[in-house]
Image (cartoon, rainbow over all chains, first blue to last red):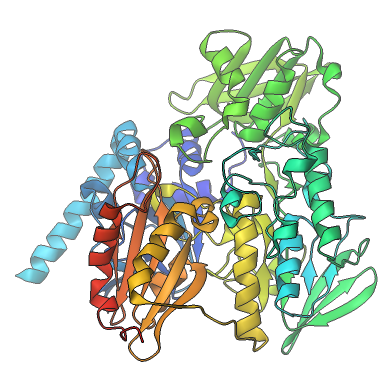
Length: 140
Length: 489
């Protein structure tokens, strides 16, 4: 087994990629790009097109809707998938609450990535189901 | 202080000088040119300069077609590259590029302390102290334009024992060899292209699939110049392209065994080779800057930067040249800016010079005033001919402020992400954008009462956005802010 770089080791611990083999994890780390955002920097912008699918490697971020922080995201969490899946502009800002390190996949590549990795798609679907359940609970 | 004498350092020094900003430039090299004093290894650039375009070479619009000349304010120094090229290719040779940079530095009087080696960096209250081979230099602002040219090898066992791209031997020495190239970016394909008439077998391998620029419709991917090995592989010649991880490189006799593993099915495939070359990219030679707190990211260890190319973690340290890739901007649809190449970062340097002049040296650069009736036409002309927008799509924008009392002012070129995120008076920014599928199209960002809204216009088959349909559409978008501006006198 080759010595893995840091990002491969990091994502190996994320539930989204729990079913992938070592070479598959390396392929994922190559396919995604790394991005860094300073404290307070916006990553997704409400109403601005062309964004991507992000997975947080390190740091925390705020979900901000119309200027109000609604929730916090941490390492292993992901965001931007709703905008990518629907082909619509984001409905919230995502703002770095600390220095933030992420992996990012352009929106147009998410479908190809998920269909090539059905186990990741299933894990993502579980994540979306959890979000829907929490939202339903909150509404009721 | 400015460190580096490649194109980024030269452009910034020139632009600072024209704004009257005193500064010193240090360089380890003996003369200007940076990495173009050595590379590309096959001595031909990937960036073109079209000699004949129908646009005067002394015009700003010509810069769209000339990716290699630095950008002066004076017409006399424009388009330095075309007369230096011998006409055999619209990609300049490496020596022609070097000559172009030397000529720009000489004609515009850029002063550089050559042979001065930057050794260390310290911070003392409001100042930075650069330890160099010529002693200490102190300055409140330091800009590093030191390139991304330090060889990088991923942590693969045995890969540290093989030559890197920069160690490429004379091409004849690979005669009838089996050559294994680790890496499938432009540098790997450049070497493969050069070895086609020499090598018996060429293997290019890395975990990710090969992208081609003609498919991405951007500079992402292998450029058309280097696609020949790809066709050779597709037609089952002597080239093999593998999407595999490289598990190990082991010396065996006079050659090597490379153990590869398929990323999809996990199957292992050992391959014998006479030569292995690591075309695995480069990192930025930042020395002790990470210890000072400069955050880096990605395989190239780029310094993370703000929209104005300041370290995201150490205020006062700035970057120019290809290091500007560490300020990715919006990166819409995953398409990067051209900040990694001369045709992109030469504009960043000019914007950075203005930013430093205004924020650090109390220089106020006048803003030309516009009349409401001419604003739409002005912006559409910039979208059709402004080289900054063409080369730095979704990254640099032409910005116009609309103030109820002071009227309409041309704020010049600014980073688009700064315009969107920073807030400010009612204003409009226009940029060109691409989504990797069709032709580029204009994007309009309107800021009204602090809220920015995005509008994308349709592309035009002839890339001309000055027609009446665009005038009508942009006029309609701008109406909420322009109708509130003062009437012309």
